[in-house]
Length: 360
Ligand SMILES: *Cc1c(COP(=O)(O)O)cnc(C)c1O
View 1 (cartoon, rainbow, N blue to C red):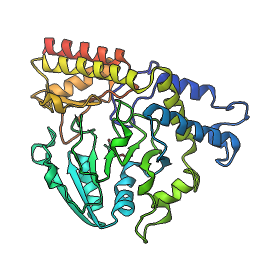
View 2 (spheres, rainbow, N blue to C red):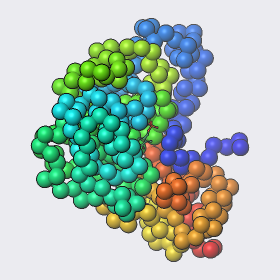
View 3 (cartoon, rainbow, N blue to C red):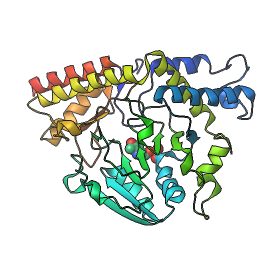
């Protein structure tokens, strides 16, 4: 294929073309260093300026207060499922909200370390809505509350958070970080695998309030202790140097186009176009019916017939609309329209949905 396609992959997902071009330009010789970023010592001055630049740009984008550390780690969001209980379960108790596959995995992992209460769950209905949360269910002696902001597979997302009564609120924002304005002060810790809305796979961003660091259980491996990485500026060992560089390019690109408020407007517009097309069709329906629960990043939808779904996917691919298969738990299709998906990509998908609906 000679042309680039519109890639609706849930992750790793599409990256901004401007970022890929810049990386290509700088591939052989970064900023007069005579080498690729991939070849550089992470202890060099020039690399230090890259990781510092990544942190600075992210702090600016999210308005991160100075009492929060920004860490660039490895192991994916899935590694955080273990690091969180190891570091934050001081009394061995935590409360979780179960809104999808990733929440479920976080819960399972936390159960290895202590007493986990699931305060709300929408599992019986295949996570097709957000469960209502009774704030009285949060335990007074829980060490933290864990939630998933955007449910990548099922297509729901929280627009507001429950009152957790001063408990640290820890949120997995892997699939919607930087997609909309949030107030970091509302959270004790935010984490995200990079491969959806930040950069390539291999980097995990952790934004953690300083007062939570330093209480890891004694058996916590050095590499799984937030203190290790906070004290060493994410350079205790070799960090994922090239991934952090690409994340920096991505953050700077987002700043250059107006930051999170600007991309939020575009994201809301893209999602509205797509939901309208699906809701107004005769063939297609969304996995998530409650409009207020719907994600602006991941949109699972389907027809009533597996044959139609297959036909849709095959014909869409011919038009350069790719990676639209749904997760096996929902079937059908899923369009992931992260920050880097251009409006034109969604317009083309919408036009294709309308055409397919008319013809079938
Ligand atoms: C993709 C995803 C994960 C898993 O991320 P890895 O980096 O592959 O471990 C976890 N949580 C959410 C919400 C995700 O979308």
